[in-house]
Length: 281
Ligand code: GLN
Image (tube, rainbow, N blue to C red; front, side, top):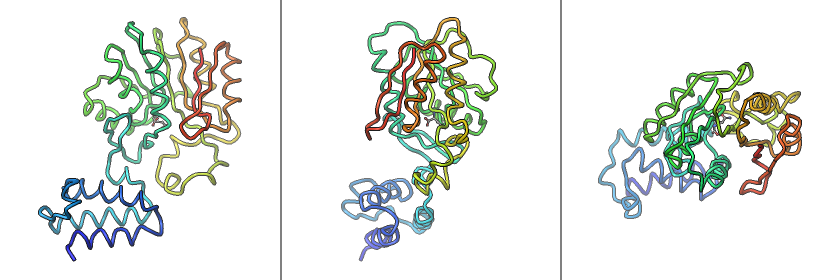
């Protein structure tokens, strides 16, 4: 058996108890391309021109991390979001496809807009939202906040990698006095998972992704939305607000924005059929 064939067989055998076949194939392909420098056609032809022992050691290390249920994107160090590549590490949440749909909603609404928009992302993490928006709204001015300086460092790198200009500021949404004026759109995917919802989450998310970015207290799960509603309702010109939401609190989140005087409120489902986004204006 060739080394590559053996490597693949061992990989599948080790991971089958934990992951589905389709997932394992993807993991193998990504790691082989990344760590073994193999191209898709090398993998198909099982060509091993590029294999060397140093690379194999790295590959085996990655395999052990998968066995320990570390998310593949932290192992690779990047993920894809909206067709773009983003660096990720454990200081940021791995961008999710649901969040791509939030970006999509904004772009859909702005399709015919000619104006130079100012957009602010609250809790930017990897910077995935403003960077994806910047790519598709080249005239827009993008700003983003996050409480974590580690996250902002990564977001800066992601902006550079993707050739976008975003104005990042470190700030805590919960203590911020006001938002900058002259913002047309506020977007946010804040922490919204309650501690008592942990049982519904995947183990590898729970064990690896930053709890700061995921969780809110059970006693006040809408704390970030209340701040967003409060801060935006104080602005001279009210911006359009787009937020990703907890599917189990969709109606409560809608009511909350209503109580701050937002007249128009639209909920939208994600591709899984869960209420996942709200637009308020
Ligand atoms: N805005 C980032 C994202 O959507 C981070 C979200 C978060 O950390 N809660 O992935």
